[in-house]
Length: 388
Image (cartoon, rainbow, N blue to C red; front, side, top):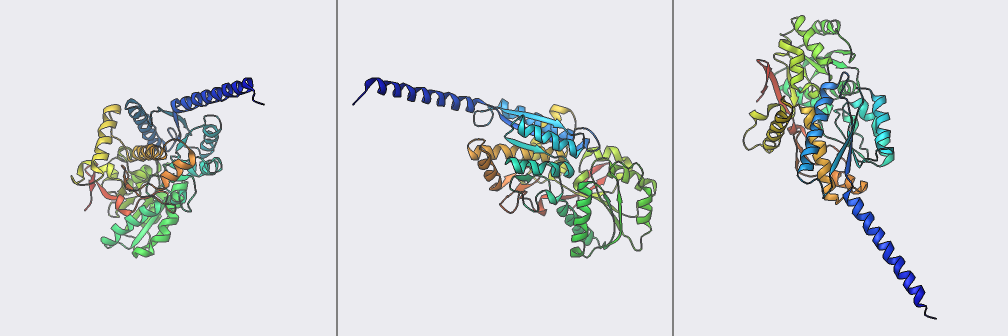
């Protein structure tokens, strides 16, 4: 039998449920998009992590001032791991469990990134690393992406330049950190491809203050024609100073992109004169031809960073900017912060022009850069000069 009271009750319940759902949707739409970061703002890797954080802070503010993303503000939640991988792991847990971030950017160093990766994989959280080692994305991890070129690419770009100059006997000096150890492995793996023989193979610790013993052994290696240093942070600057003290200028020094920063020049002083290395376009923004696709991106970043912080930007800050912009682009294409949709959008990124290069990602490539994204530079008169 028809019951009008029952019908009215059901109708009210349906209306209440619809109203509740509408309120929840409105609240969700108004909630900020939470960008988590773990960076090495202090400790040996500080000159990488400090500009990374400053860049994220600057551009989160700029994006919010322009209306946010999909009508929602960005909120940056960041922690300083002090260049300690164990702390990076701990802060990642906090960002996932307590802060409930939508995307994670960070892992200034390879060690920090690899300590974070298992946690984001378990939590199914999109994570864009700022570390250089190829191990970050090879083998491919479902939720892990990266913006810097790999150490393998750096070794290939350096050996390519050496081959062009008739250099085939090289002394390798690498840091025992995650980045340095991986770089050593990759350099060993690709040397033969370019006709390079490693006639010396030395290592140093990231906190070592004197590396003259290793350099002396390399200097006396039979037939050595050049020195290739793989490290980041303060260590390569110590190497460069010791290199100058030992008067090794007749032995050309190559560094990796782990030192592509004006801070390296400041720390190394005159001893850096003549050093060659592969770098993103940002380091030589003014020297890029007018038709270069990256020129507007790097010059705009250069201008914005200088205006805000009254100092030169670094390629490491550029890695952070690319990670943030890739995240925003993926969120827009995903239509929100659904993690799987954002991850899939990142993975399908094509033709994205950043400070580091043009990104073309795929299910098999969670970085999306090729060797053309690297430019070879040399230190001339205390500044960077693009090599032809």
